[in-house]
Every structure is written in C-alpha cells, then in structure tokens.
Image (cartoon, rainbow, N blue to C red; front, side, top):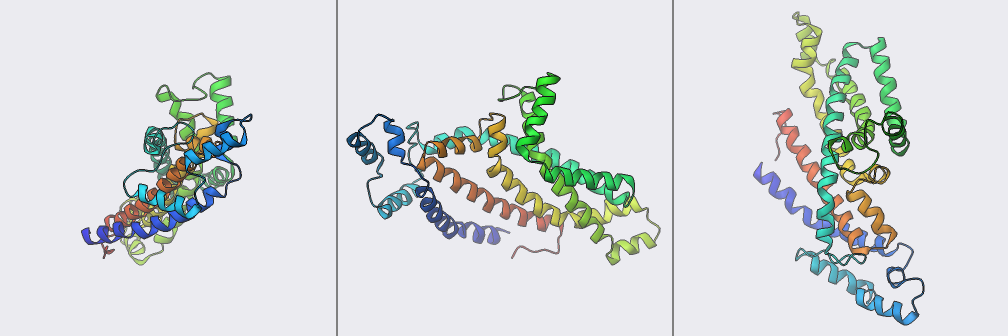
Length: 306
C-alpha cells in the first residue's frame, strides 16, 4: 500500500507540470487586458503600461511562466490582481464552503442512490422500477440552474421555508445541496441498478439463490459489495466534478465558494487566481482517483495495489 501511494504521489509532479503549462497558456489566451481593467476606463496609455509593468505582464510569456513555476515550488501561487491578497489566502477562504457543500451533496446523493438502486433491482419491471428509472432520467436531464431556480421559487418565495441565497445557517445549505446532488444521485442510482443486475447473473449469486436464500438477502449480503466497485468509481469521478464544477450552483445561490471565486476572477481577468483554482481542481481529481483505487482494495480483497 505504501509503495503504491509513493508511486502515485511521485506521479503528481509531471502531471501537475503538464497541467500548469496548459493552464498558463489557456489563461493568457482569455480575451481582455487585466491592466486595462484595473487601470479603469479613463486611464491613459501610460497608466495602463505602468499597471502592466507592475503586474509583470510586460515580460515575455516564457519569462512569466518560469517565474510562476519558480514561485509555485516555493508555495507561492502569486498575488491576486483584483484584491492584492495572496492567491493561497483567496482560495483558502473559499475552500471550506465548497468542501462542505460537496460533502453534503455527495453524502445524501450516494445514500439515496444506493437505496433507490436496490429497490429498483428488487422490484425489477414493476411500477417502483419504472418510477426510479423515470426519476433518474429526469434528474440527469434537468439543468442545474433551472432546478435551482425552481427550488428557490417553491421553498423560498412561495413557502418561505428556506433562505434563497448565502450561508447564514444550516438551512442555507439545503437548496444548494439538493440542486447539486440531484444529478449525481440520478447517475449513481442508474449505475447501482445496472451493476446489481450484472452481479446477480454471476454464478455465486445464483448458487446462493439455489440454496434457498431469500432474494433480498442475496442482494444485501452477497451482491451489493461487488456491485459497489463500479459505483464507487463513478462516485469518485462525480465527487471531483462537484468540487470543481459547482460554478453554476454557487452562482445561483450566491454561495461563497471556489466556483463563484472562479467566475469573479474570470470577469476581472485575475490570472493568478484562475491558475491557482485550476491547479487545485486538477490536484483534487488526481487525489480522488488515488482514493478510489484504495477503496477498490477495501471492497474487493482480490484487488492488490501493486
């Protein structure tokens, strides 16, 4: 296990280097001049040039990248053009709200998907199964921004049960987590059902049925653990998506997380913050994949992390 983790962590270095090159190039291709935005609409050319020099944007692109990489290896991701604060502080202030929203969304969606997928399998080709399949298809198809606005209209505007925006109490996380997790629950429910259907065709489950074990017991005791392996894979990918892809939901509900910070940074052409956010998203995906590999070995002892 330790050898496996060591190899995977060492593999982070070339991956992050390659990702940093792509991010740096793509960010600098964004239309617009940060110096002009910071200097103001009435600024003269000399003022804009002074701001560009202060930000280091007047240097060749290669020199800018080498300076960025050198600072990055010292734990310095630069300074925000917009606020003047270190990028690490900007991202750190927004990380916990995004992590909290992601964990709550992932927790309820995984539990619901597991229960619903099992019920759909037990009641195969009955009205419960058709209801689950229809609900899963609807959850995948509905745009998150539309669902968020509809939930806001119902529970906030009409019923006055929940707040519309922000996070001032535990009630503030309910609507964003429902919006963010609905699509994930639908995807995981379909995967759970499909994986269980496949596992139930294996010889060992059919043997258990032939010995007289109840169908429900075969599912919960014998089939579910092996069926969870592809579900865990998808859940890991979806968790990474939630951490880095909650931009729309955070914008709709004015959630003070990384997604909203990224939108604000793109609007102001805040290169250091955009680069820091994208690097963090890439790192999160890599670490989540490592965690998924470890969960493989926990769920199936035949899998060895070598």
